[in-house]
Image (spheres, rainbow, N blue to C red):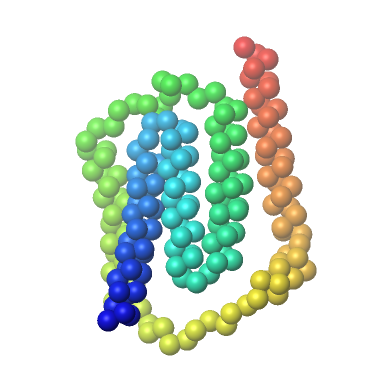
Length: 174
């Protein structure tokens, strides 16, 4: 009886995270404000991190929080603040009902086809992957992949500096 309660709780937590992801996705897509869309994206990323925690992958979940929720969201926020998006921009035009239906169909059809294919053809999960310690993973990345790791950080730094320069040039022109 006790296992059934834990199983029901696990299902409730799973569906709660799925709901957080879905609501955040809808906020991101349907919001007319870029800042509100960013808040929806952050909500979705938190839900995905929660799913990683549920799959017993705390390292990936914490990296999701640090990299995407922390760094990338802040970078997107700076990009929104540095560019002057006017309220009457292209995204503020009202959508017709026909376009909304097409967008929903375009989103749902691949999910339905891929979900049904995964359910029908999924192999049994007899094999359990080997667990790797975080220190071994860190040595792997810092030894073999140090150059791509540093190039990505350099690219993000140059992109941020470029955004600041463009914003300053636009302010000088006004």
